[in-house]
Image 1 (cartoon, rainbow, N blue to C red):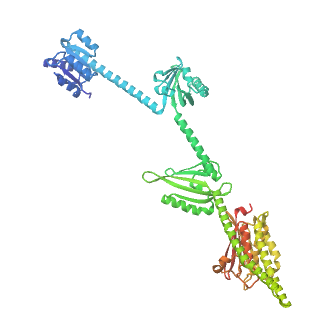
Image 2: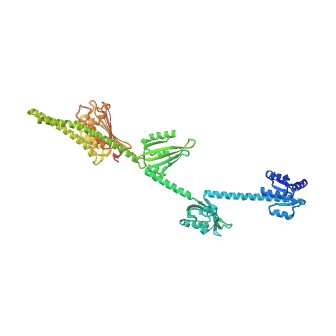
Image 3: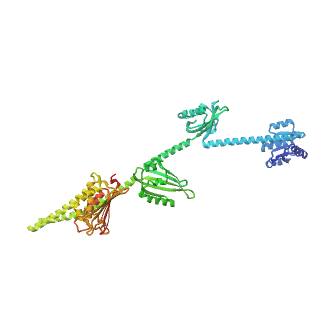
Length: 630
């Protein structure tokens, strides 16, 4: 059911009111009315009743139509207003119509009133719809202008017939033009395009005109103020009813800020890549919501693979870990994920080319506002050079400590072994020189003198031998096979081996060669084998086991026997000391193990011992990779 028309009637005569309402009903108008007779009620009705149309007498006892008309003009100019009077006069009514009056009706011809009211309502409704449409258009245009301003995007239209280009306000701003300069000649419009991009733009427009296809491209302009801007433009062809091109229309987007941001980002990423390459540090990231992994280029480079060669994931990362470090690394990683704590650790990894290197991994969790982990951010660094530097530093410290021990040994030799025979020689010489000795005593003194001189000579020879170890390290190294070296030693002491019924068990399958000084390795083998035979158990057949083992970073030699053994709890610190002996039933000076240790360390290795009384002794020698043959 349609809403009733609200009619405000300004009239004091009840008979006229009844007649007026009768004509309206007769004319088929469904309405509700409100009658007012003074200004106060009239103003109140305009704001409260809000009529669709006003019917007013021209003159009232306390109010009049012209005043009502003026108030309507001020308060509600869009509401239709019709004078219903018998004395308005035609000339007067025409003047009012010129000033905004909708219509008028004479009281003696009210049969026309319904028609005029209907027409007035219809025209008012049409005008309201036009006003609404216009307001929506204006609002839409404002929104478009604002959207173009926010997006730095303007619009343009090119008319092929007039050769004119029409620009939106934002397009004018982009080109540095005032809004009233929005109409440009095509050639003038092209003149804004950067000279280096002019051919491209002209070609794109020509292709669109010839092919009737849409186009888009990036180019630069030089705006009215000489500022270079980066532009993205899209265009569509406009056709007439005969499918002939009549023009182009499209958008122009100022992407200068984005271009500069992209360029800065590219430079930043390039600088980051350079910095990561210099520091050999890559970064990685795990999105814990999507489980998407990311590796920087340097991570791939550290692993020795091409970017994108493997799909980033935990399994791919851990696949490069050295097998000996996997368990330790997995435990750390598991604990970090379990407690969401930041961790860092060193580990060895094997590059694609097989090279073993050292890595450092560190990560930290990123949480949302509720404390839930969102991402895991980490770095991965190749620290091989640092590890080597640390190893060299340790070697230097160990070498200094060794030299200090050597100095202590030399001090001991000089203060005891060397000084004692010298003191004897001096004493004997003084006795022979100062005392009158018979021939027998003089002969005895000369015998003592010769013994002291020989003892002094032995000490000096020992010193020369020790010093020789330090000098020979500069000799040329060569590939030495353990099996061949052992065979040479067995041949040289074959009679002793047969006499003592020595049994050998060897295993050089894992590694059988090393790049080293053959004379030193021969001496090491010889001394350890000789000691095993010399200090054999008298109740057991001598057994000497010699084997080699290769790990990721070292080559090991193990010498094991079943001899008398050494009490390491009491004598452990003296095992490799100079002139230290642990069994007195055989001849010896205590030089062998000292020389073995000195030669091993000179070759860059280290030696350790395990031994128990009556259970035998085991020596383990370790050489770093750099000493092992490739």
